[in-house]
Length: 357
Image (cartoon, rainbow, N blue to C red; front, side):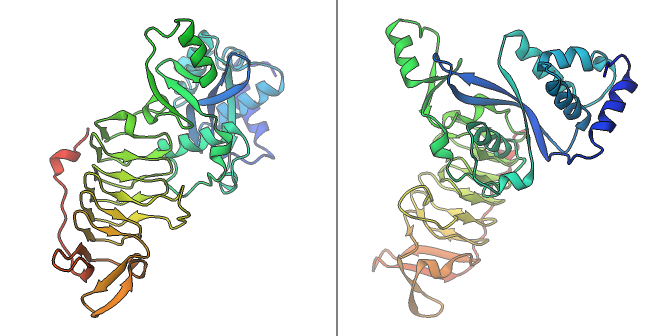
């Protein structure tokens, strides 16, 4: 079909969607290769969620007919500057990266796809982008097997390299002006993702791609947020939010404090802190907390920890308090035992620290 008028594109779009299911997510990404031509990563440039299906249809139609994304831009959207509202970021991304000769790819995804483990490298990077850009919350996406698909890369301000390629550049003296940001399977969050609205991060190296940072989140210099983890509302993060952990509105993670992770040690319990909790400095929590819980400084509250219940006057295990609200948890300095009392302690964040506009 020749696109000589806006009406031509409209007919193409209507015809395309007659017997097809629209994807929940689609977008554009750059395919990155190493010196031998092997694909090592995919940089997601644009993600669309249930919108701009005219652009999607045109891209699919054009690719099927052998056109590149750059050619589709010229042939199908020659009138875009003063017409279709809302697709300029897609078109501009394709146009900008085309100028640099980048290898641009197109992707589409449905909610059902996200329930199954990723099978290819590009799927992992798309899923990390969905988390980082707040399309999905932690534990809403299946990331089983992601580590096996992701190669260990040297992440720099000019893009990722394999360790072998980087070491060769180093020997040849070709690394001047290049800054190494991480050596990891996951890209640093801010290297490949826009800054989320209402977020402040004092040390950008401490947030991994795939973290979910809600508006009002403040991550201080030694706070850390892993992939598939993060905040759901205003939160102070001076401690560690491990993979799979969710921190709700109004919660304060004290310096050096954190949750047991699910990536090692056989721990399969999904950690969380409910609303208005305080996880004290240097404390370690291995039990999901409900709302309004306080863990005193330096307290270890692992699942099998013997805990004395002051209200019921008996010994229990810490896991018995899973998801309960209004818990005050501390180590008794006189006898050394961990004690729990059902007593709501008011926790309030300093509002000035979370106005991150």
